[in-house]
Image 1 (cartoon, one colour):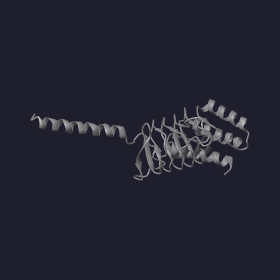
Image 2 (tube, helix red, strand yellow; image 1 turned 180 degrees about the horizontal axis):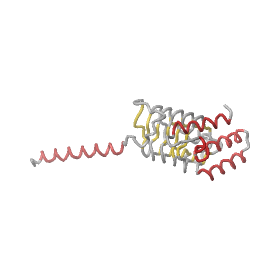
Image 3 (cartoon, one colour; image 1 turned 60 degrees about the vertical axis):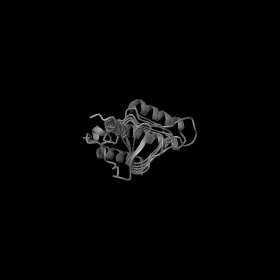
Length: 216
């Protein structure tokens, strides 16, 4: 696919994903996530041709203008959508598939100074919600979702939902996580569920203790 045709597709996906989008002019002129993706497409083309300095200059200009930092070496597929986007960081060896959505404050980063593949891979139709951190050479599976504020350090299987710190898979191969399901705040809370379970167990123990002492 040619670069300009891909640019057109990047605009179209904004209308698919964002109900606030009203016109092509508005989207093209005011959507910082779109500008960051376009800047990256140009920077990545330079990076592949080994114009490393030029690629970094373009990426830094884009970062200054949009508040979104994407290393020119990152590989990004079609129909990538960044909602709002301020504070997003995408590392050099990230690989992002098609139809992927990420929200503001997301970090796709590394965990140290290791060489080689050190940043995450996001497979097709995955979603990473507001403020989540996905760190290291791990894979977020197809159709999977990472909850807001989560810190994910291990692979997430296909068709799964991971939440918490550290991120835990709480839904897998149940109801499929749809790409257009943007209710990313409506996620299970395993910590809250566990606390409720402990509270119920304590109440049961209190009742048993009262019965053993003959207290009514």
